[in-house]
Image 1 (spheres, one colour):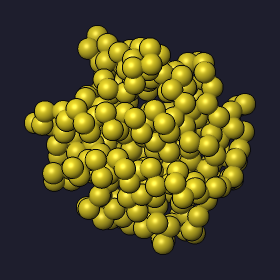
Image 2 (cartoon, helix red, strand yellow):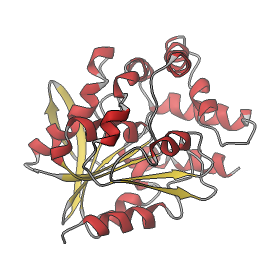
Image 3 (cartoon, helix red, strand yellow):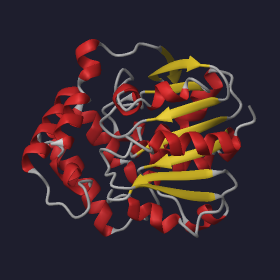
Length: 283
């Protein structure tokens, strides 16, 4: 039932209206972002099928951060109020490059970057591609996964399901709580909400280039950016965080006890993130 209430809660921004910000051109794609608060900049990168509001505002993360930091939250390409190209080639590494382009647009040299789920994978790739633009990085609800036949099969099954009009069920089953049988009612409800809120062909294109975000063990070992991974203890994606422990340099992991992929942004998350940022902030 908690999952059902959370899924319903994520529709609130669309009933009351999105928080409107500004747009910038990122290599021909219009990207929406908000810019609030003051202090060291923190860029928030949301997850797949979400947007800046329902990933960061509904759980209260953005509101807590902006009391101490300049908080910049973008809608990833293919999502929210940003452009949604129907070309797989417009995603993958282009989603990573959108972050330094946004910093350039705002004339920001370096920022803390916080991502969740897909945003966490984007943040991990960002660490390897543009470490000079980062004060710190928090790739949350995401970890180190190497491209192999099994996970490629999952990525393509999600994309194929979307293209066939069958929805997000393969994705939702794959991220369901460890040790729990998937609840068909919850999956059906969340699937319906995600279909209602999103441009399905665009999200299929995102998924077809997801493997571009792969990182290597060598890149993890050479990392110089302070990194924290915050993940639910019963989130299936915690396995990728476990694999980074002891491998990624300058990395620490925080586990939200009892948190799954849908609920880990609740109690304990903001406190862990704020503690990490405070430890690495100059102000």
